[in-house]
Length: 343
Ligand SMILES: Nc1ncnc2c1ncn2[C@@H]1O[C@H](COP(=O)(O)OP(=O)(O)OP(=O)(O)O)[C@@H](O)[C@H]1O
Image (cartoon, rainbow, N blue to C red; front, side, top):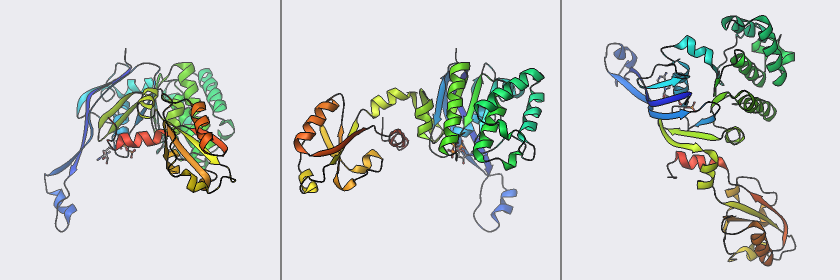
């Protein structure tokens, strides 16, 4: 049975209309006109216990608004959401016991207190006994490499340390559901790797259900089996990441660096026809090529031609120094989805 459900979920924000003319703010005070934004526009999905789902979409798509409804911070305008059987906005306190939340843009830790004190306050809030509290703080801070910062005031922590602190705070009561809204934004590669490893491990070993919003496709590739993509408040795609890739990214790239001895490298490239492969611009692979002036990028579909076959054919035509196979980037497919280019 689904642990998180959204059924025809809608959220509208309304505010006094901005009126034309002089002193618009003052005029707004006396006007009954309002502007309405439909941030979430009839969203439906069901998430099963133990799933790790990426909730993706361009800026302003309605991701955070959905998460805020699922955490009980916002009340839906219409439709329903349920989290572990509860309607979050009606049962906020009980819902809070089942969920952990991290908003990457905002901390739930007390800025002037040492990290440890924030954890203590939260432990009191959740009625944790001392032994459980110590065990969990010990375990989580060790896993997230945070033990040496327990006595540092939050305001003196780096962004990565603070974010890891936020994750510990969200996990102290061992919630069965985690909502992570851009948890890796602004982190360096090491901090990001530590955080994503922790999330994956928690999902794997504890069976924690995780809903993750992010703009970072590396996080998505590393963590999510399933993605829900929304735009303008409505679901564009809901399904397995691997199926999305099979459907929209079946091709691969063979990148050849031609030998310097190849006479008139660029001349030779023109008009060459290799069956089952199409020569494309170097930027199609999305990586910096070490020798762009003598590189050839061939796009091919592995269902039509195997890599050894293609390499054999290419070597009949080119003198090759090096070659590599590159997968297309998820980020390209996702942006095409956002742009309505994929159906
Ligand atoms: N409190 C609010 N009052 C009015 N409009 C709001 C409010 N919160 C969000 N919105 C609007 O609702 C829409 C969806 O915003 P939301 O923050 O959910 O998007 P998002 O997908 O999380 O975007 P981002 O990736 O930029 O964080 C946007 O047009 C935003 O301006």
